[in-house]
Image 1 (cartoon, rainbow, N blue to C red):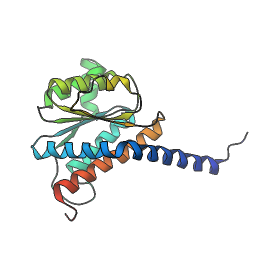
Image 2: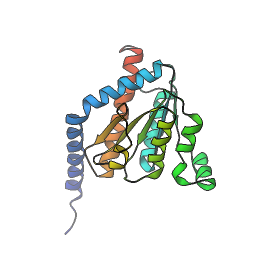
Image 3: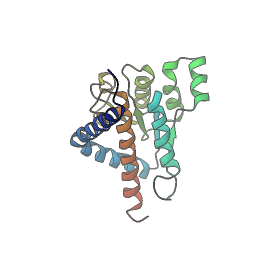
Amino acid sequence: MELDIDQHVVELFHSSIDTSMQSLETLAPIISDCGTLLVQCLLSENKIICCGESQSGALAQIFAANLLNRFESERPGLPAIALNDTVTMTAIASDSSFNKIFSKQIRALGQSGDILLVLSNESGSNSTTEAIQAAHDREMIVVSIGYQDNSDISALMLPEDIEINIPSLVPARINETQLFVINCLCDLIDKQLFGNDF
């Protein structure tokens, strides 16, 4: 049967919209709480450390860049680090273990009061779970932006941590919604720190 490309594109739009609507219903208050937590971290002169594997790693870099540089308006840079530098990651993977590509950096850079923001779109990633364990060892709070039923990460989260689970198992929908969530967080940070008219 020949694929109706136009109809397929329409179906992709509908799939994305459905995931967004489901996320709206369940995640809005959690995203709001997360924005406040990140602001408190920055006001306390701490930093946000971001990481993620695969496409989620690119989103971690986008989030850090939006804080360090700017989001939608000019403002002072905010302290954020993305751990997805390929030289550092491959050096750690080569000399130690791929599972330690983030945790080794967190143990070197993380301080009590910092926040680790982890983005994930796949289950059973040892590098991600080791990153969370390292953050807890350094007395950091963890924010996880992942997907529904990610029991590997949920099992590691502490009461003060925040888990934002996208209501989907489709990697493309997860990444699309993760991008929207980090854009929301950037907007909330800017509005709370600098006001509506900065």
